[in-house]
Image (tube, rainbow, N blue to C red; front, side, top):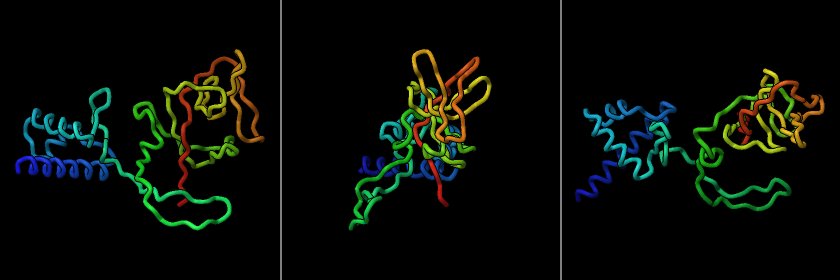
Length: 197
């Protein structure tokens, strides 16, 4: 009986943390967790957080800050859709997917940028899109990168040939960029996000 009560209490606390996360678009601080659960001592808060970490509701980054675990929203995946000739399809729950898990490998090393300009349009990256960038992924020739070239920032294909490094656009209106003095790659583009409405 006590075990069931403890499990119910933990589920209730997970729901409270989830509600805070989705309402505020951030995880609560340890002091806010104390207020949410009406806990007065820091050790009580740490004990509850430890239980939530143990069951995967939340986790901690390298600095000990809380990051969402299983409380992240997931979206139902209902199968596949034919983009060629129409074919009969039945709605069937294939899985649920968290976009964070799908699009982000290194949470602490990932950031978003909003795209302006059309130099990468033929790569399917349009003005107004958001790109997801991993700053620890090793850039390879052919990757789309965010780079600082001679003091100016850009997004282009990285092209390496021996010692020569060029940045190539995906739009014939633009010329390749050859660094005169300095090139720093800040990250590799790993995904593009576009909203239609």
